[in-house]
Length: 226
Image 1 (tube, rainbow, N blue to C red):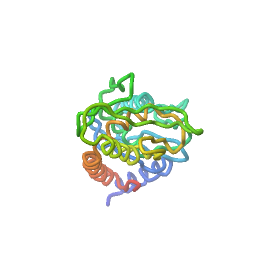
Image 2: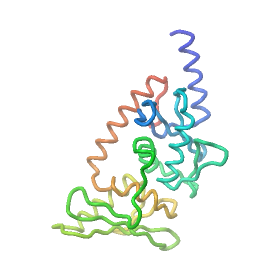
Image 3: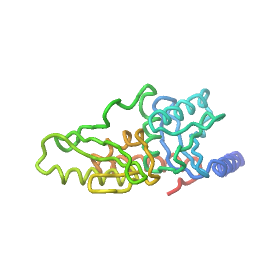
Image 4: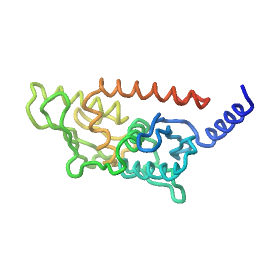
């Protein structure tokens, strides 16, 4: 191992110590030189970071952070171009991983649809809805469906299971879910809604992303947090 390699590894180690745990890594940014972009968390502070030094990368990190705020409802940290916090004070780990992937992978002009929170079911002719309301000192989302299906109640149970898995949400009733913090997160709900439809397909996608992330982090000399 050359001294240059040792110095680089020491620099990466110190940077990681400052940033905290690597919660998610997108191996290639299709909108900016295919650089890898990571999300790091320490003491409730989330940092979007890359080890690339290509010109303009700081502006790209700010763009990603701002897009995460727009798509996920997180709060940018004043005086920083690449950091944010959750307004509720709790890190919603699984949703924020999807949030980073969308902020990096989708067009910078992408925005959530407005109006009702709804999505066409991927396995039936149903249209799935999420409607929120205050209930017993927490904000609850009611999951419902419209359309034809031989067993809509069973299908709704599967979709609710998707919210529990990919939204890290709590089951309040058969068709009601809430975030663990008990607060309202409409932007995160819009984000998670499409993933809730098809657990097997999302698992395949996440496994592929995890493999690409491991390959990328291996070249940097560290292992992502499990």
